[in-house]
Structure formats: C-alpha cells, structure tokens
Length: 299
Image (tube, rainbow, N blue to C red):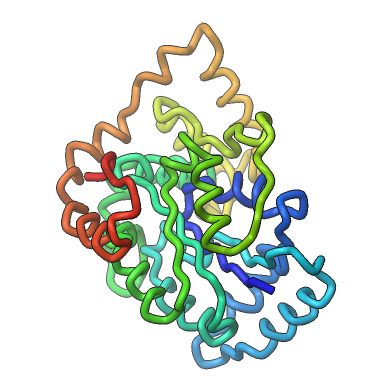
C-alpha cells in the first residue's frame, strides 16, 4: 500500500487538494488530521522527538484503509511556517524520513511573485498588523524568527527531500489551477494510483485570499481583535472574526467595488523589490526536477 506525504507549501492549493483530491472519493485514505500531525510530528521538541508514536498511529490507520487506496498524510505545515521563515522545514524532513522512509513525497510550489502576496494576505487574515513592507523585511531583533525570503527558494527543500527519499514529486500551483486534470493524471502515474476525473464543481477554488486593496482596512481591524498573532490588543472588540473577513470579501467582489480587484499594492511591491531574488533558485529547481516543470511564469 502506497503512503504519500503532501507537505505543501502554504498557499499552493493545499486546502483544495485536501478537500477535493486527497479524499476517499478519489481513492485516498487520509491517515492523520492537522492536529495529529502537529502533535506527533511538529510539536515535539528536538530533544524529545520519537518517531514511534507517529509510526504506530499510521500503522493502525493503514490497517483499516480500503485495500486499493493510497494512504496519505497531508498538511502544508510540514513545509515550515512562512510567517517564521520556515525554520523547522529541514527538521521535519528528517523526522518524516525517520517515520516513513519509503513514503512518496508530494511538494507543491508556486511562482514567488504570486505566493508572497498571498502569504502576506494570509498573515493579515490570521490577525497580523504589520504593513507588507515591514512583514517582508523580516525580524529586527536577535533570536526571534520572522519572515524570510529564503524559505521560498524551493530548490533547497526539494533537494533535501530528494537526498532522503527515493520518490519526490513536485507539482506547480499554476498547473493545478490551469490544468488540474493533467496535473493529477501526472501525479496519479507517479504514485501508481488511479484517480477518477474531477467533477466540474470540484475544480473550483477553495480559500481564496482577500483582495489586496483591503489590506489597510484589515490591518486596522486586527488592532482591535484578539488573535494568535496579536494576543493582547490595546482595544479588544472581538476574537477571530471570520464573519468579518467573509463580509469584506463579498463586499469587495461586488459589482460596485470591482475596481478594487485591480489595485494590487502588495504584488506591485513584490515585483519591484524581489523580481531577481529567486532566479538562481528557480534555475536550480528546473535542473533537479529534470526540466519536467513548467516554470515559465517564475522569475
């Protein structure tokens, strides 16, 4: 029985894959949920980590999985947290190798010019209050992790997984978005697992970011809400107001506010400051994946 481990990255259609693809209807048997992956793989201190509990949980779940299914662990947190520079990504890779050395690894990447704005908008939706310029600048103090551009030099993490695992499969967000059936057919072949074709409604996007034009509004709202990123605001009016973000998203996409969608200050900033930052990394990524990826939209 094949075991696949999908590690993300964040903002590369992970939620869509988890809700529409890596599900029993598509022949997959998810083994651990996000919380279990956090408790068994991510959260243990380096001096405390033991692969045995995760191995035991996986073995028990595999026994009850349908015979022809592809068992899978899927969580974008396994690639490291982008708000904090992905500092744990190499540690997690080695932990996964201790837990399941024969697993197939699935990694999804995305053009840095679009993933960076998306990560920043996710940061705001989680309660962040920094401007995009301050967020991308990273931490100012010593010893405290923050955003790091190097986390999105994909060749480094892909190369590490290739050194640890025999089967490493890299997909692009762009192909998953523009040609999902082709992308999944390629993945199906690599995993040796036949998937049915997606229904039309299953190709619709899940978890789209708020329009960038709303960033200043969301930052101000975040200064009045209790959140993981801002646990003690000066004025606490609400906590985790998901309804507020949904309402903002609906309002911004209305016909009256459609012009907001064309105002993309975060993307403009990323293009102006980081357009050349990832060129060498993307060249190496093309080389180590044998030119099988369409990286034409990557800097």
